[in-house]
Length: 202
Image 1 (cartoon, helix red, strand yellow):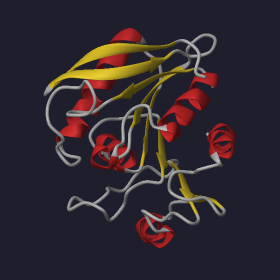
Image 2 (cartoon, one colour; image 1 turned 90 degrees about the horizontal axis):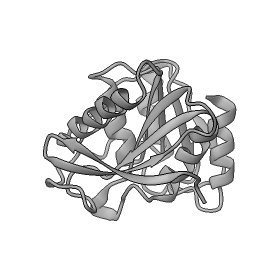
Image 3 (spheres, helix red, strand yellow; image 1 turned 90 degrees about the vertical axis):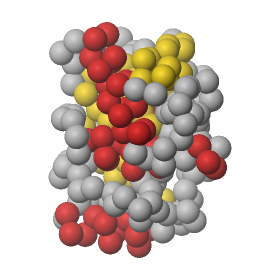
Image 4 (cartoon, rainbow, N blue to C red; image 1 turned 60 degrees about the vertical axis):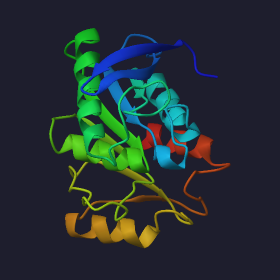
């Protein structure tokens, strides 16, 4: 169970964004915005991969914001297939900056959320980027190139986003990909390992 978890409402460009806030354990040394998987397949900010990342990062001193993007849960607006959602992420970043002035920013996301986080990173500066099971090749808009120090974690047996698709995206960037052997898209039974990989490789 995550400690110090509560809900906050963030003003987004399409209306209120229902957001889970996970406080840093100890004094905050950074802020992270973590994006959920595709809501058309049931993805929300309570997703286990999202919450695993939030717990791992909070233990490392990050104040974590996990928004339900537009049209999801109690958030206002309508799902926009990864376009308007980037504006939502930027709105949450701006809110987080007002609450935690001057702290380093991390963007993170799982699956569709990784696609959104990568696109947000192409528009704003962040100090870190974490992509888990990132949805490359799934949408008409291509997943952009990302900084060389991006932490990319993918399950070897991912049944939704093939490992080959991620490597084809990463190869032209000379971008390392951390592979969790035998893991599927949702990292079932491997969430503890996922958290350990985040903390070890961050």
